[in-house]
Image 1 (cartoon, rainbow, N blue to C red):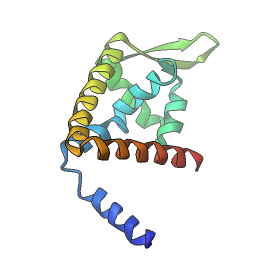
Image 2 (image 1 turned 90 degrees about the vertical axis):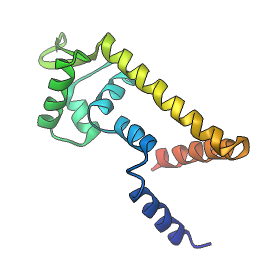
Image 3 (image 1 turned 45 degrees about the vertical axis):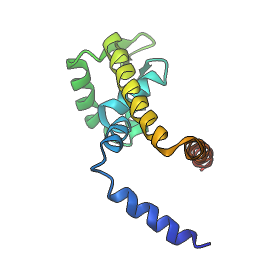
Length: 140
């Protein structure tokens, strides 16, 4: 089996799918403002800006721009850290939580349609492979 050729095929497919609506929606979750909101949700609805910067592998200046936009749209709040007044704690607001839930439901709706089009057997196999990939990727 030529794993290198298969890898090349996957890489090439990924490069041509930017026009696919679902892929754009899913990709949006993994970067920028949606990434920050999801990160907060997965970390007890709060974090320090430095944690966000480290996780996204971007500058603190870039995080500041993202946080300014999120705060302007009332999706987060920023308050001094009671344990260290030099630090700021970023918290997910109720509006941010609601937006995340809406976005999550939208993604689930799209994914449901895709899985239905795959059919029962292929959909189950796809989910099995995705789970396996997540286990493999988390080991590295």
